[in-house]
Length: 232
Image (cartoon, rainbow, N blue to C red; front, side, top):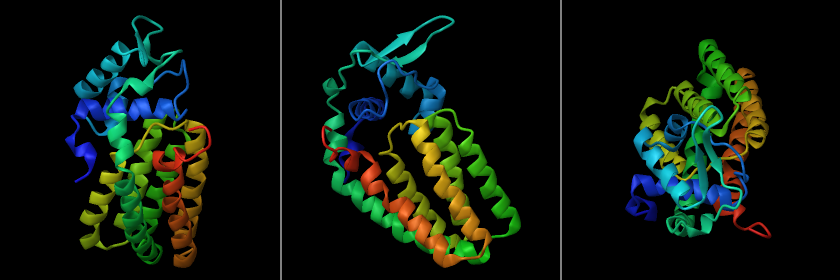
């Protein structure tokens, strides 16, 4: 059983925001999206997100300001190392790598069939999600578009029996995702555009190669890979 299942929902919010700050994904002074957006992106209730963010502010990791220019900001002298729940996420490294590998296997199969079976309407839907991601102004907006796109590719495969298992693995992995700079995410979205182009060409070989690279890269780009960087 993954270690994070022993954490309260509030502690998962605390851990993911604190870990993102530790890894430099959220910068000092950076404003976080609204509590509601954070809640949706992290898969918790708005009340839970608010509690988690407030407790991080109480610890000096974040700063919560009221008024016209208010909001939630990364503290200038943040101390995310004080958040004990971060160690539980780090301890789940093997679980995360296993989920990534499982997702690669499922998503490559689904993408292969999507290249052969996707309708024009489904391809237009995918184009819309790529455009939505390109317009995202925050990691929360991007995450919403990213989730819709990958689930839409799975549906376009026509393999209805595989969708529950794929969704289960996807959402298990989403429990470990952290906030990322939106500029980085926009670069990642170019891979989405290439994927949809390959699906439109009915090219399963190229489409599978793109998605295999796209998902396998999580071994390096999620926190389990970022922590191996010099200076992390």
